[in-house]
Length: 429
Ligand code: URA
Image (tube, rainbow, N blue to C red):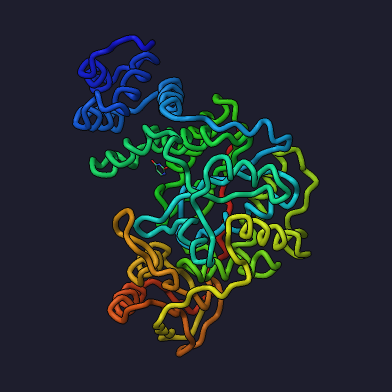
């Protein structure tokens, strides 16, 4: 039985910079979820938190209170180690498509609950839905069955009963300018990840102009806060800070990202995709008790690809079926010779979104074939007249808008740029 509180006292306390008690936090989250705390009151509280922050204990209690509004899944009966990855989101980030079957191919169960894209960053479920027959909506029982089987990997939508308080609060933060606040982002992400039931978690915290966190110091603070939250809740958690100034890989969209994931799963693909997939897999495998496992070899020898095919089939998909293609395409060529010195992730993400690959409101239709292909990555040489980008869209008006957005996305210079590290830092418990 929760002790009763007055919502206005709770708002006033945070407005005046005081820490909230565990009892106040449990009460306000539970009563907001049941509709007894009004959205305008929660908006005021979210803004007070945005302005005055929360300490480590408050964030931990806030996260636990959100978990308690729903169910916490439990995979301890599987009899195998579990590991999962969460990315804070970036342009061309298709890592989950390779990483999930790759790690599962070593006998680790990977329960990967994923989301849909909104705005300039894509969603894993949208990408996988370009595979004919593939289903994102598995019930908890079906997902458990797949994890217990030889397949050992699922990528699916989170059920409605996974931290429902976060769904309500996230929608409210979205319209009250309270999204980009470390305590609220960390508790939002970690309430879902802890409730999901994995024992080991690796966070890919993106930094740069194509990411939520533009500054490394902010990204590091977010990573540290999430690692502490996971550890306090009994989930072994680590984070990698990774650069998101330029798109990951060469394809941004849905079906074309699946195509590129298949290349990487087959031992090829762009070097940055392979590097990050292997780095995250090493962390997950080490945490799952397999420090000697060699994920790079598993990409090269077909082990990861076999695991991918089994995972897709287990969710009704046909891994051999042709992928959807857009009706139209157009090419943007380099106007001068030199080296590609920069490609702005944000502009490429927005171009792919304008081409129809993303949505501007939840539930809107997307074009599975739409997107942007990058023909030369940063550091590569290019001649005037060579193709730099191909844009795919179903409608010519969309194609034109995407081409306009891309016009200034790349910078070509006479000198080759200095190589930049992709993995910037590692945050351990
Ligand atoms: N992703 C989430 O799930 N929550 C946030 O607050 C931000 C990103």
